[in-house]
Length: 259
Image (cartoon, rainbow, N blue to C red; front, side, top):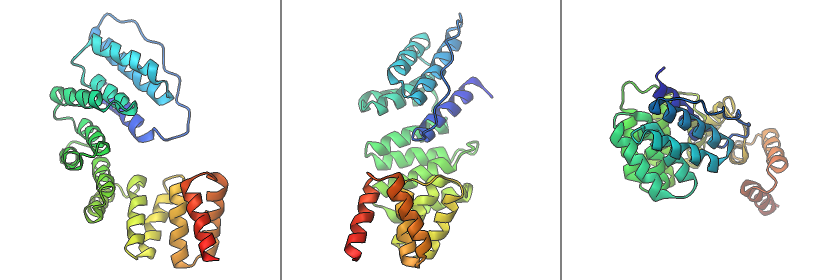
């Protein structure tokens, strides 16, 4: 695997696993090198590792050093763009994403990442364009990711018809993609098809851990279908694991209203 491809794998891990609770491995010490391109790669990898650990200040030091060593190293621009996005500095993030795109316009992973940024900024149609270009790349091995991201972006805008279509296409490529299965279960429940919602939900549980959002969805599905044992189990887990969550508040309010 080429160095840039290895780095994209690390960056995708930052984007997809940022919410995970596991503790990442401590970043390795910086290796001395006289090759400025290689030094930029090493410092970018270090920046990714520090981001995984939540050490954002140290990550910024490494990424700025990488860009000083090689101003045309696209993965460094993309990684620092993600970091600026996390820090709430949208203008700087946008600038680095666009610089990376000028350097590597045919990189589908980069277009997916930029699409996520645009969606978070409310630029839905531009985001969809980036996701679609990423998904159209015949060499891209993770087509399901930009398709799922397109679906989630459309959901943010309330366009549930197009969102369902994108999520369905994502699941055609990867039937075990949890980030597509859970919103599909939610959509099916909203459409009045609780049995189909349960099917997507059970597929989600086979590949992903429960969280407050998924437990609340399970409760609502089983209220419709009448499985009291499953409902009670989900409710107990939600109250015990996430006592201060918005979903637990909704559960308690709904139980009060049912009395």
